[in-house]
Amino acid sequence: MTSLDPEPISTSELANYFDHTLLKPEATAGDVSALVAEASELGAYSVCVSPSMLPLEIPEASSLKIAVVCGFPSGKHHSAIKAAEARLSIEQGADEVDMVIDVGAARAGAFDRVQADIAAVRAEVAAPRVLKVIIESAALDDSQIVAVCQAAEAAGADFVKTSTGFHPAGGATVHAVRLMNETVGGRLGVKASGGIRSYDDALAMIAAGATRLGVSSSRQVLSGAPATGDGGY
Image (cartoon, rainbow, N blue to C red; front, side, top):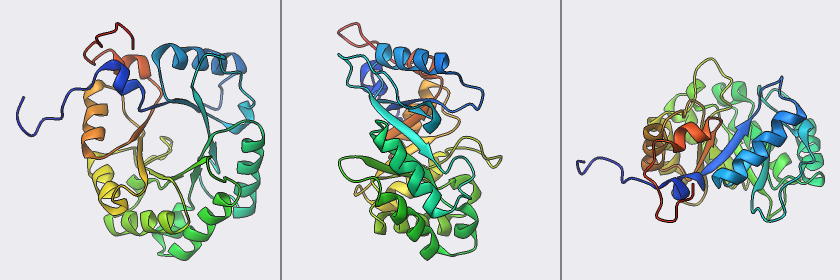
């Protein structure tokens, strides 16, 4: 290992970064129940699901959080609709909301509109509930990424998040995560999501500044991590 290599992270430590995710349109209630069981077994921080799958049954002994998406995956919903969707999700037990911005507004430089859109959802996701803002970083240039992160912070978001995982431009990159982290300066969390399929991918994102990871293949990613001393994931 060179001085530039990321420090290794054990399975239990790594799992605590994970939003164990299932957002496929064809997902059933049974699939989501299996997701919750697997997330609890692996020690993930949360599950991330579509809002129509709420409410969820979380095992009593589990500290697992529930995250839902909002305005997903296009972000081209009216702000009032996003706000209503977020409010209903909170009423049905969500701890965290991952909203998609209007990416076209960001590409057009209308960052005031982006900020207002985020603020409308923030108004329905009061602390201690958590609001993450999906910026679709692969569809933006660096200056747009910076400006959207600044808009998210100004609107009171808790996290900025790279990607839906559904955009043809791609998912998370180390470059985008690093730029987002530098922009928010530790005042907001940074969630890397989209295309994280191995332990090395996860480690690289954390080294770049990610404080949460959106992962659908959590068991596969954890299989590459060094074992913990207590024998758990």
